[in-house]
Length: 42
Image (cartoon, rainbow, N blue to C red; front, top):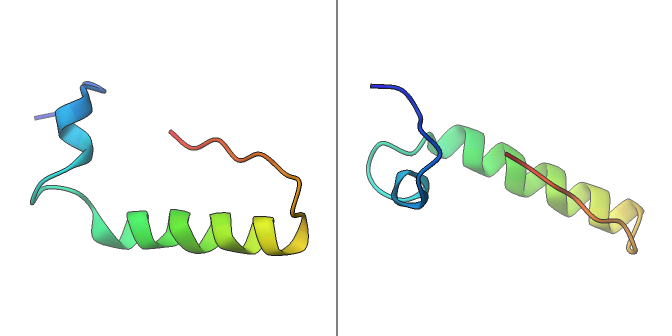
């Protein structure tokens, strides 16, 4: 089953936790280096 983009697919047991942690760390790094930055992730 592929990702359709529905809101319910962002939560649950099938979420890739490693990918989520990567996005969180990348977001933290960007905001630490550039506090006024805006990040967008899909």
